[in-house]
Length: 99
Image (cartoon, rainbow, N blue to C red; front, side, top):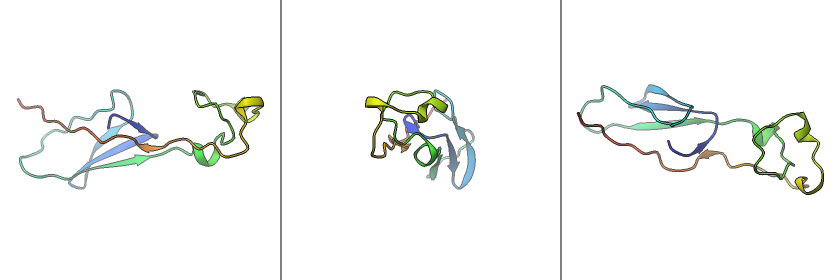
């Protein structure tokens, strides 16, 4: 899952939990998968930034949220909600490592 905005992804193969993806390089090696057709599912756990976060902070490059982020002034303030993108942002990449 090369591009996602969330907290964690769970990977399932044929309905069975196969592992988590949370840290770079955002990859998971699936072992002992037999030949044939399989279903791979990705479950994304999101954060609550759009619910409880700084929804009036217009600064998009804010990498740290602390108490001062709620005291927004000037051009960083927005009367409208500023919601952040969240979710799986590109298709998962699946490839085979033949031995």
